[in-house]
Image 1 (spheres, rainbow, N blue to C red):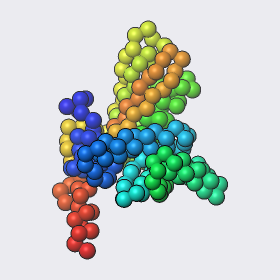
Image 2 (image 1 turned 60 degrees about the vertical axis):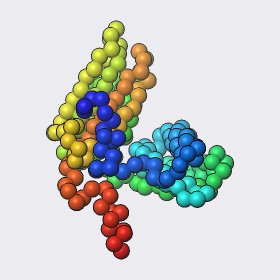
Image 3 (image 1 turned 30 degrees about the horizontal axis):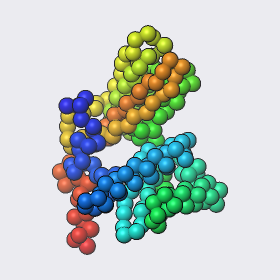
Image 4 (image 1 turned 90 degrees about the horizontal axis):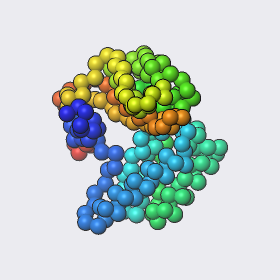
Length: 223
């Protein structure tokens, strides 16, 4: 199951929350879902070097709240907020709704799965050995506090005639354990010989009973 099921979707409602948080029914659901995909694609394409880990979206009537988690908030905000204002205007024209953008800084990009995958992919594009890139990424993640990490690359590694898969693992990565807080990220490296895929699993530890993501909503209801 660890190789067939998306690690984030596998744990939704248990230790992970949805990245799009809103309710709609009928045609509105389809419209909002397609709109979310366009918003995420626009953010990533307009800010390719901003170290964006994930884009969360919340909705209120006639308003879209976009939360960007990034390792480089200065690039997204720009001088005096120029970049984020330009992005807000573009998204408002696209959605015909009021758009609010919040930028959250990632304190430890070394243990963010998506950023680790992008880092390995970028190094491979600069013709650095994939074994060295994977080993360095795993070492940095363990030093930054991750309890385990697994990195897999697949494709024509080193220009070989036949595609193959190579992996490295440090610590433990219990992919079948539902209470395990495992973050998953992917990236693609455009090498001379073709596209090489990169997958990263980062294990942050177990989420014990009573510490699930929905406990924060229960606390809010009691206040």
